[in-house]
Image (cartoon, rainbow, N blue to C red; front, side, top):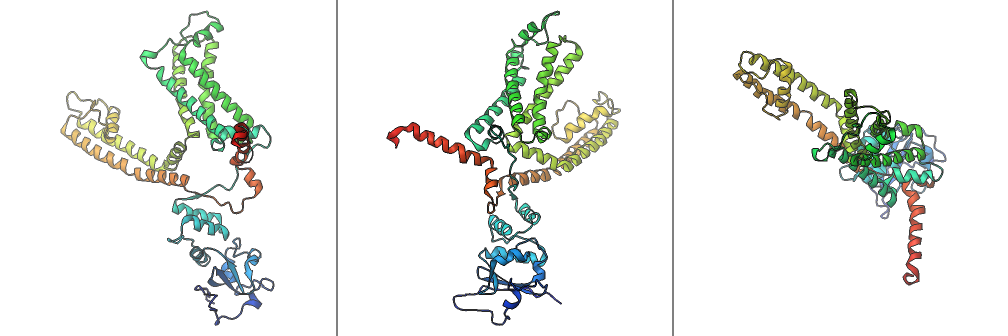
Length: 458
C-alpha cells in the first residue's frame, strides 16, 4: 500500500476553516487510546500549518520528538485532535521532509541558527545536525562541559592558568606567558648576533669548581634572561599539573608535551655545567642541537593563538595533498636533474658533475626561486630548465586550492559556533569556567568598589 503522506496548508482558525473531508481521528489517535499502529494517521499542527502523515513514517526515527509516542503526548491538543507545536513553519517543512525522505536540507530562506534551534527541539540526531552545519560552515558548541577540579584552590588555579577568558587576572597570566615565550625566542636569536655575542658558557678554565662555573655562566646576560624565562615556564607547568583534574590526560596532551620539551635544553645545559664538560667537538655538536630544540618554544604560542592551532590542523587535514606535492617534486627533481646532467655532460665548465649535484638546481627551479648559482649551459639543458619551471608551477598550484579550502573551512568552523542552552541545567552551568567568575568573583569586585567609593557615591 502506497504511503499517504501530504501537507494541508495553513488554516485560518478564526474564520472557521476546517478539514471537513478528513474523518475524525479522535478515537484512533488520542494518546490515551492510541495503539501506535503503523497505518494510524497523525495530524501535526505547526503554528496553524497542518501536516498529515502515518505513524510508520514518524517511527523511522524513534529517538526524535515526533517518533517517540511518550514525548509526543505532551503536545497533544484534544480540542483540535492534533499535535500542536508553536514553532517555525518553514523549518518544519524541511524536518517533515526528513521523515519522509531521510534527507535533511536547510531551506534557503531560513537562517542557520533558527534551523539549528528547530532541529534541536525536534530531537534530530546529532550526526544529522552536524552534517547540515558542516555544509553551512558552522559547528555545534561542545555539549560536554570542561572538567574542573572539585576542591579549592585547585579550581581557581586551573581557571586562572587554563581559561584566559574567565577573568581579568586569567588574561594577565596569559599575557605574561606570551611575553615570556617571545622574550625567550628573541634572546635565543639575539645571542647569535656578532655584536652581542658573549663568551661561551662552556669556555672556562680547567679544574674550576662548580660554584665558579655557575658564577661564570650566570654572568652572561642572555643566560640570565634564559633562566628567568625557564623559571616562569617551570612554575606555569608545575602549577597547572598540580591543579589538573586529570593528570594522566594532562601528561598525554600535546601542548603540555611541547611545554616539557621547551624546558629540557636548559636543564641539560645546566647538567653539562655541573658535570665539568669541556668544550669538545661532541659537546659542541650536542649544544647546537639543544639550541635548535629551544626554537620549539615558538610552538607554545599555539596555546594562546587560535590561528596557529588552525594552521596545524590544516596541515594535518591536508597531509594527503602535501604528500602528493612532495612526491611530484621528488619525481620531477630526479627526472629533470638526470636529463640536464646528460645534456651538459659534454659541455665544458658544466656545473653538474653528477646526477645528485643537479637536485639542488631542480628544486630551486621548480619552486621558481632561481638563485642562478647553478644552471645548464647546453641548449638541450636550457630547454629542460624551461620545462622544469612550467612543471614546477603546475605541481605547486594543484594542491594549494585544497589546502586553502581546508584552512578557510576550519577557520569558519572556529568562528561560527552554535550553542543550544535550551536544556542547560544548573549543575551544567556551574561547570562552565565563566560561571565561577560571574557568580562569585565579579560580585565581590563590585561590592568592593561600592565600599571604597564612600557615602558620597551612595
